[in-house]
Length: 179
Ligand SMILES: CC(C)(COP(=O)(O)OP(=O)(O)OC[C@H]1O[C@@H](n2cnc3c(N)ncnc32)[C@H](O)[C@@H]1OP(=O)(O)O)[C@@H](O)C(=O)NCCC(=O)NCCS
Image 1 (cartoon, rainbow, N blue to C red):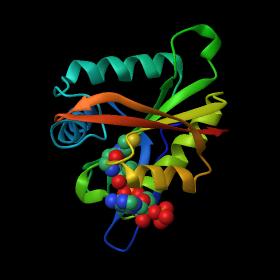
Image 2: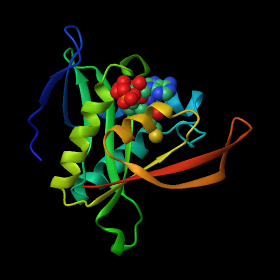
Image 3: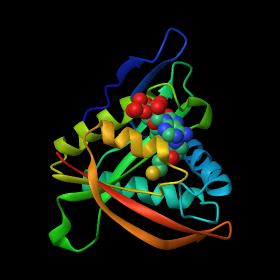
């Protein structure tokens, strides 16, 4: 994928572009993600992530040719990110990936998630992926479920009580889309 940004807008004051994530974005990406680690069950991580985790992920995705995208505001601030990583390490899973998408809280609810997911699906197809799987905690991530359904993801399973965070038992649902 080229480094050419995709210019887009959600409104007159909301210009953003979507482009491949760069190493210098990773601290902001970590901070966006860690906000949800601390405050929400949308992620099952309970400890804040270190920058090294993101550097490693960026390196692995770059090396395997899988997409890791940043949504950037006109002024350069990172508004959100999305990536697709192999669903499982075993080689027969090589055409299947799990997608991840997170926006800065103040950037949610304005259509940016849709733009980022569309770019991610396009880039995933370009990378040769065939199946994309979203793994979603259904109580906190209703917006994510609605967004993925809008993009043609269909129900592919529901695991009950597989997580525990903030003293609550949590389910996950699987949504899947063929590219
Ligand atoms: C999930 C996320 C990427 C969606 O992006 P977004 O730009 O906010 O998405 P949109 O504004 O297009 O909203 C998507 C849909 O969710 C709906 N929605 C928004 N908030 C909602 C809520 N709290 N409950 C139910 N539906 C909600 C919207 O009405 C919209 O529905 P539609 O497609 O029928 O119009 C973004 O909200 C986000 O980053 N959330 C926090 C992190 C997260 O949950 N990541 C996903 C982990 S699986």
